[in-house]
Image 1 (cartoon, rainbow, N blue to C red):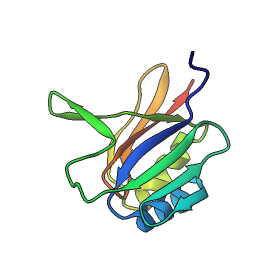
Image 2: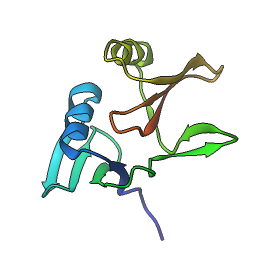
Image 3: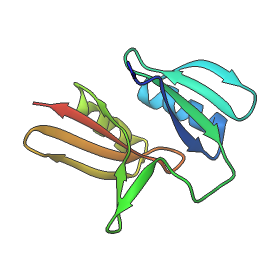
Image 4: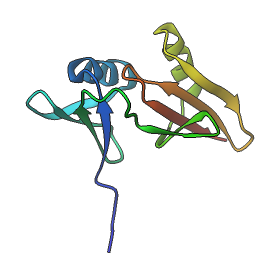
Length: 122
């Protein structure tokens, strides 16, 4: 049976741009790279983030419910307000930033148009 989540794969349009965005802006480390199409990034905890370069402009790492985008993945943080301020200074598109009672929630788009979420539990 299953024991853990190994890695998550997301599409990107420009691999180099995506690697730079994740490492410089969110604190990921480049673990390995396979040619011009695949890269593995890591954080101190959790599974690998695998970036796949694609030419398909219609695929993203989020889904839509009643016309609203929802992230497939949400990260945990203890510095959500600082993260929000940092993303704003980068002119990152923010979809949501609010206190949901149980946690602060931040949803934002990466350089490739993928929607991400971050939670800071109370």
